[in-house]
Image (cartoon, rainbow, N blue to C red; front, side, top):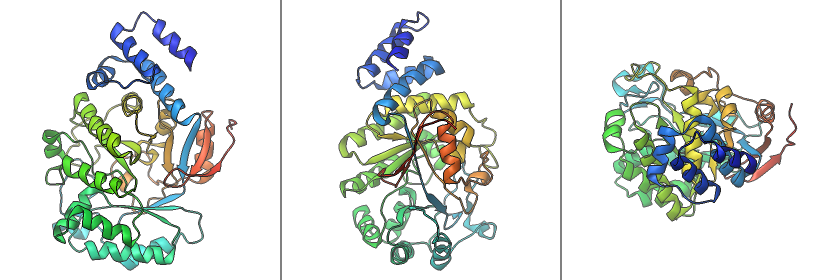
Length: 380
């Protein structure tokens, strides 16, 4: 990697400004907002790949992480109407969707009793009847049934609505849910933090400040979460760096984020279907810039269910070190949005083979990145 770095810097094709950025990255120094934007605007894929993998290898070596998890979406009916969303159905069209009861969700979870899953990921639409008591009962019943199953659930969009309806502060509501069994938070609902863009694509949902506040409160409780960014729609490179900069500042204060997950905008059957999707090249550039800019985030995750396993595999050479997990999505939220993956489920062996095929070391982890099993790094 050091040899590749020197080769990169010796090329006359790169501007002195890009070479200065590279020198900072190789020296372990933080790049600025403007330098992040410059990487997006001027750096080619090869340049970004070398820098991103330098950072990646310093943090994770040759390891690529995954876990045994499954997803449950309690509902796709929602009080909000986000223009980028292909998944939700408005309450007035609720007959087109689903609204599961606590017992129905618990039955789905019981269906995994004989499988070695370690995490259930629960998030979905926002409806009035799935309120504080609904989720409190759900979390308690999951823990009573399978205490070791890690519950990663709900986003600030859901929390904000639920706690406001219950007339509780964020602190009060989060404590109730944690006491009921909630273990960690996923990263969803962040979309893009810039107010003008957020209002256009996700108007009415919690604000960027509220999203960040909920995660900060959770971190200050000694707990961990993830963060996402929806990219490739009407945002600019400056909006992306602004989004990551706010996350970087929060991480400086709390150190509570485990992973950053860029989520690609998909244009199938939504109000933004006229907006073309970005290329795979741009996907890889975005992963690389994220790895370089978010120097205080331990992990960058490629969400294979949304971008497809092939692009996720490519991303392992552009800064990512995590592929999420087996997933086994029960309601096809990703295929509804236009993902290449029409049946988002991978076996442990498929994930291991995918990682080994690019010369990386597969590591089965739990939600908090404790190592469950370390595989050898030989190529298949």
